[in-house]
Image (cartoon, helix red, strand yellow):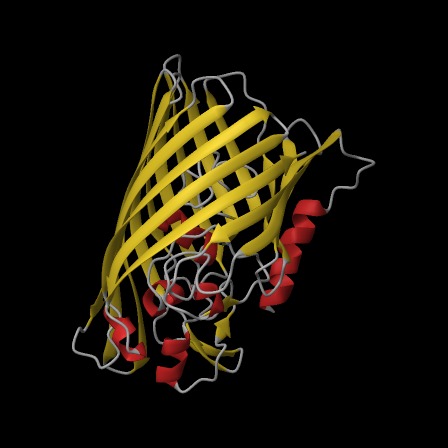
Length: 406
């Protein structure tokens, strides 16, 4: 049933035939990645490392494409595809939706969107394939959103367009995201650009699987409906005429913490995941500043009376400079934490940490982008004791990306 709903969402977005479409457009990129990996094993291969490349992983090939059909002046259908060579399903669909936005001759405008899509949380990842124009690696916040959050349902938006700013309100009712929070609690925060496709399976840490008595690799489907409850999010935003943005959003998947299903050979619970997100973008000439903060909690109840609650928070500050030439440097500071309650369990998974990311982009023309990036993550996670490691680890990763846009 869950697979059928996902497929229906994609077919809904792609239903208009090319014959009846007013216009069809496609854009995307191919990416070749070389890395000097961190020493700690990356989470993609079951480790507790905080970077995409760790241990022996050194190369990857990927890409993304956004295909849009302007069916009528008011109706837009779109689908985003992703290619990642180091994923269990290399080719997948990131999101697919149909938006209806009637023409308006007043300051007010409204729209409705149906399908499977990212909640409007990120100010950072606004490029093709839900990537950042500034860096290869998203912040901890947006790395997690890419891995575990996707809304399958309906989104309504109301806008008021003024001379100096546009105010907007958004609200959504959705399903098929009940496991959201599983990875954040089992593994903690991580920084990487491996967003999950709608048909993806995500790997849990081998240390976590061993504690549950499940053979590795232990995987799960992040986009499932388990408890038959409807989740929601709602937010407001102000977009200035100068390009600035201020956005506040409340998210609640309304998961039933006692509900579960069999998935990939083990029990998978519906996590009750709620958070606030506040994001700000300022522009001063050639300089762009992005900042975002998130705080919330995710919980489930595997046994009656044993309520496991992981309180989390994270934030970042990104500074980018675009002087108008080929070179575009950027730097970002992240901080993150998870506090597991009760904190007396034998499988401790609380953590805290910070990260520094520096990137230099060279774009000689619109078709090519070469990016060098340094990422340093300093984190303390008590779960590492279960593998005989020090709770504190410093992961350092270097990446070089050659990207061809089309």
